[in-house]
Image: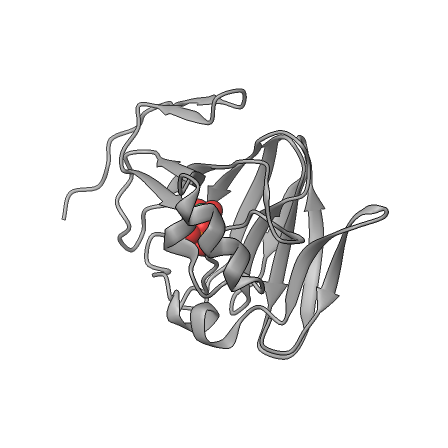
Length: 187
Ligand code: F6R
Ligand code: ZN
């Protein structure tokens, strides 16, 4: 098919906007059932307004081989029980790497290759590298929205079932120090 023409996009780290934008998607608490440890706390929060946990604004680049799609994710501040608001998490079934770049707030990029858990903290000015084959999820560990830019190969694809069924091997939870990443089989 036709490749995209050259363009520049505005990336607004204060709002999470991308201009021009392509697809915008929102995930609410009810879209994250089964992912948090405290299912009862999740259901209470769904009943209390089912707020948006995160939003992804993509640039108008198609997910096809050769293209390099990019998008900005905004995760709101909040927790379900002791666990920080987070993305669903996925792996790229065509094992290909991805780069995240922090824009605002503070988050944890959690990665899991099925055996080993690794994580890095993402802040404005920090790039996190996700190697091919590692499932990934981000959590907002701060008190304000956490925003980052993601850049990945257009042919990578997205496998959500692998995380929904197998977990990430760890959870990002509140602690006296602010947060900690707790390894947990199936977590
Ligand atoms: C793309 C990527 C990010 C996420 C976004 C939302 O490969 O890793 O753009 O898609 O942060 O997370 P998920 O897709 O897990 O709901
Ligand atoms: Zn990804």
